[in-house]
Image (cartoon, rainbow, N blue to C red):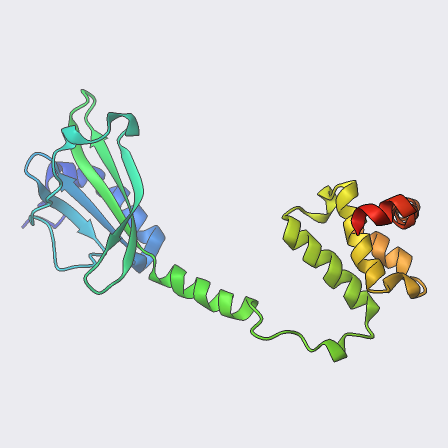
Length: 217
């Protein structure tokens, strides 16, 4: 009596370790299908997401019509199941030494767990109401972090890459919020902007010069 592996098509036995490895790595969220381009039939399937199995039609279409510049790997592209699940799919043409297509390996990854995780993280990470300002109006340290952080998000550059004009703009906001009226605010602001105190004093002098105020107004 032959084992299941012995009853497999020779090409299925050849590529079975690859299909099994991918299926084990991605667990129940990936379907791995090995197709026979000669007969347009499924040679083997791991973690099937539908009722199809070995011997069923592949319905691959003509390999000769594929883009030859793709180097036999196509995707990721999107597919949909009847139950609404979205899949990210990749197909690879496996060739014989003479260049003839021996099989086509398709990996279909169920994106549902990733989409659910993204929705949960988004719900946790996004505030739903404005912060209660009376709780923070006395916390000038929080104010420094908030003003600098808001500017960084607006300009899309990390604080280390802020230009001189950027830093002047941030200092103008901090000055308007009367942060510098607080004792010991200077080292906190310098730390938030990642500059030395001497650099900060120079920027403040430039900001408070009449020409600078006219420019920022």
